[in-house]
Length: 249
Picture 1 (cartoon, helix red, strand yellow):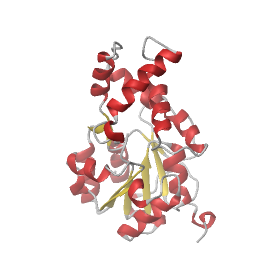
Picture 2 (cartoon, rainbow, N blue to C red):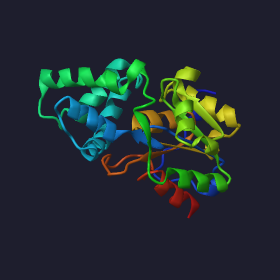
Picture 3 (cartoon, rainbow, N blue to C red):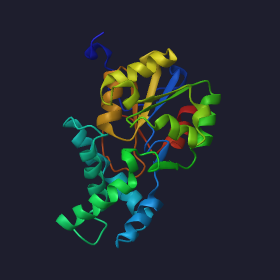
Picture 4 (cartoon, helix red, strand yellow):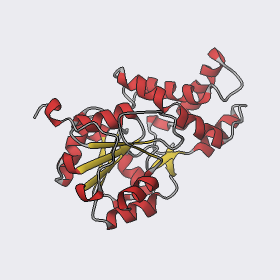
């Protein structure tokens, strides 16, 4: 089947719970966030104290910019992308700019991703996630993690105490297909034997999660906790607890 014939219908309405058999969930900024307190502490060691709350808020604010970069065919798992990501988040918050800011990022980046992996960085389970997953699972939905990652997401989900809720965990590094390529979604659909038309995918980046899900025929929903995205052609919710309330209402 061609990508065009698989494309899901463009709508701003959430599908009804009765029309779904599965829920796919991104990992970063969906189930877990970066450890902003740790980032704050590492910045302070470099002489740039910034509260973790300010870093977290700016990270959410720059997601539309990240989405535009992905539309230009950038991999989310490349070294350059991670540096750009940190620069967009932190440069407005620290007391230096330009070359000095880049020097701070150059020192900070390998501390946050030792040996090139993000397992320690993406380790803070978001509020309400275990309770929401328990409710969604009890409703009969199959739950699958579908994440652009570096091969450590299965271990991350296990260490976070969330693995018991999921029927499968799909890591782009492991399966060789990265969102928005529909291949990663097709792999997840095959893993749990569900139809794309009866599957919803939730994530935080339009270019990866909405574009990719639609290309595979899966319904998308975008997480927009601070309403930073403005008007879009897809359904939006604040977070996974909000999605859970709306699906199970």
